[in-house]
Length: 318
Image 1 (cartoon, helix red, strand yellow):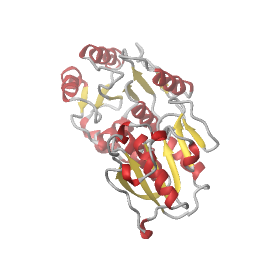
Image 2 (cartoon, rainbow, N blue to C red; image 1 turned 90 degrees about the horizontal axis):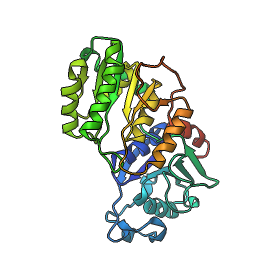
Image 3 (cartoon, rainbow, N blue to C red; image 1 turned 60 degrees about the vertical axis):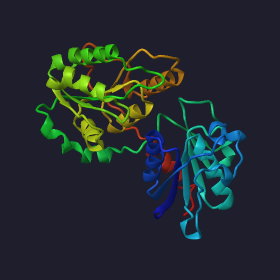
């Protein structure tokens, strides 16, 4: 199969972009990306009650004859309507929606819904184990030397920090507990640390990490994809904060042993619990940082974009 042309539709959030770009890359496609914005009040209304019309789009999405893509990959509630609309106008387009679209799956050729997130079924529904994303093992290995000059040891634990969301507050007390457990478990056993922030990590948390952990290794103080990838490549162990299913799924592309740094949630975390249980069952994560590092464990490098792309390639006609 030659290069596919893909149109990606999202609401512009990083997590959604990561998922559609990850699937586009895994399908070996050339892609363009359009941000979907709906007019009021349709931006507040569930897709199943929303008309399939250009009228509700703030930015009209037109495709000329020369621009018709082979596939549309959409993610997020607001991207549902333009995907269905464009499919109706160009029936040869193969449509893939990632996450639960909250409408009948027959509106798409394929829906990829995360196993941990919903009870969503259909003959064309695939269930992903964790989040789809755009990180690959090859990219991780290629970035290995990016941070190598910042460390002295080959015993590295890489710590990936998320940030506050509606489930976790990331209080100073919670972070101090995490840092203390890493000092007790890893620093006392001769490890150096690489600490990497995410797009949601506030500056205050980065500064706290520098103050509490800076002398034990290297703290990356800006969002830097190459540093993020390098941290995985150099690590013997990875610790990821519990606030992001996407970050833990990305970490699993490395094949490295992953500990999840637990924090007390602000509200029910049912879908997180289902995800943690799944990844523990798959042998990818351990849900608490122990007093002494476990013997490094192995698992098959986990990448749901690649796995699902292999299944889809025969369905997509070029």
